[in-house]
Image (tube, rainbow, N blue to C red; front, side, top):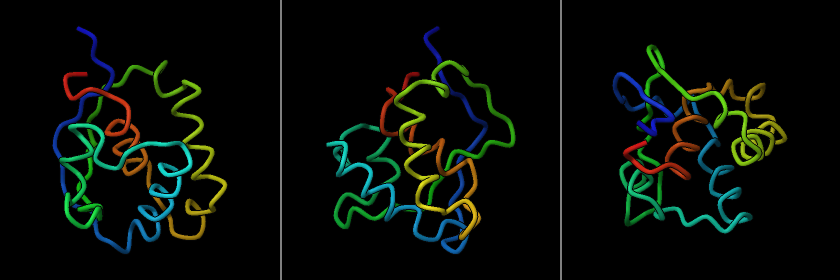
Length: 111
């Protein structure tokens, strides 16, 4: 198939574990013209009234991914933007939040 990412399950993360992550992701989306409810997956992870992230994540305890997509200019632009915000070091953001939002922003649910 045309699969890019698969995961075992989803869970809600603790807000303290992803402090300011959603704020920076919304800023990124605004700068790049990405609609917060623009894909089916985003609508599953974001409250459609408040536009707040529900903290739901793809858990990556077991995951299969097409590495080429995660090395693409599009994904790296998002990753580099988040890196420039310092959240990895200041708030200990994990890779699961970044992958979840990137997949939700750009991939069809069937992928």
